[in-house]
Amino acid sequence: MYLCSMYSKELLKGTISAIILKLLAENEKMYGYQIARKVKELSDNKIMIKEGSLYPALHKLKEDGLVTVETVNIGKRVRRYYSLTPAGVIVQKEKVTEIEDFITTLGNVLFKS
Amino acid sequence: MYLCSMYSKELLKGTISAIILKLLAENEKMYGYQIARKVKELSDNKIMIKEGSLYPALHKLKEDGLVTVETVNIGKRVRRYYSLTPAGVIVQKEKVTEIEDFITTLGNVLFKS
DNA sequence: CAAAGATACATAGAATTATGATGTATGTCA
DNA sequence: TGACATACATCATAATTCTATGTATCTTTG
Image (cartoon, rainbow over all chains, first blue to last red; front, side):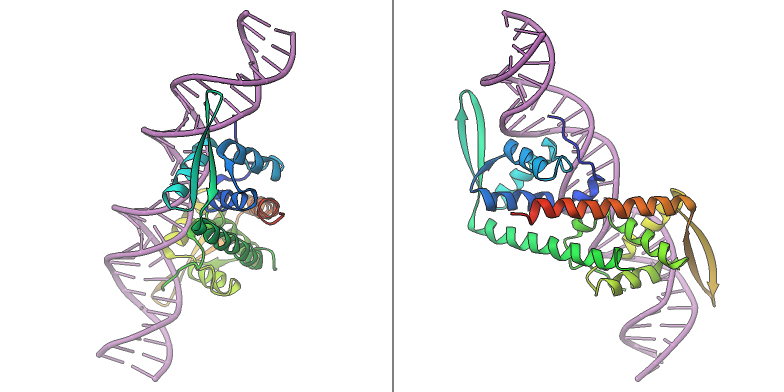
């Protein structure tokens, strides 16, 4: 899987976990690879989360108690499904609201001239 | 000067140089402290660029040939005015467009559900 | 049937960049 | 005179993403 964002990668910082949490809020349970494809699709190939970002991010969400993991064997392959915990639901809302607000503020600085 | 963003600092990544360039595009010439105050004002105290971010960012813009510096003595104090170079004008537009586009894309992923 | 490409996970090291802390110094106002 | 604003600067740290690499299975196609 060759993943790459068309944006300066720095712009994505702080948004990946929010994106993952948001998708999980809408989809009950998803696995890593599925999340990456969904983000790519929703963003029209403009945001492509790399494995090196995705899996560590998922592990951190688990570590922080925001998601639970369910390991499923698909044939001989492993698939790990992630679901939001109650804490994850709360943090998801906070993060999305924060980004929404940040975008508004940034718009005031950059585009109101 | 105690500066702090109300946002997760990661969100700001990749936007500070664009913000600085945009302000310089509108104001002909500005000095560091003035830029910090202006950003604070425009963002209603929500984005407060710290000195530890501001000055290194300005030095990098200079190094990259996007701004020129003019040092002025105000009494016994030094003030460094920054202005966009022709290259800076171009990069400014690119960066602002990129952020604009990124915001649209992020909106598609986060808020279109 | 073999090769290519997609699926599916993982981690280590490098790079980027904002922050906190700290430093120096002057100007202003109560 | 003390507090606070102005005005610059740098270093160490933290956080996060990326590149590169690794393992392995499944599916499609020539």
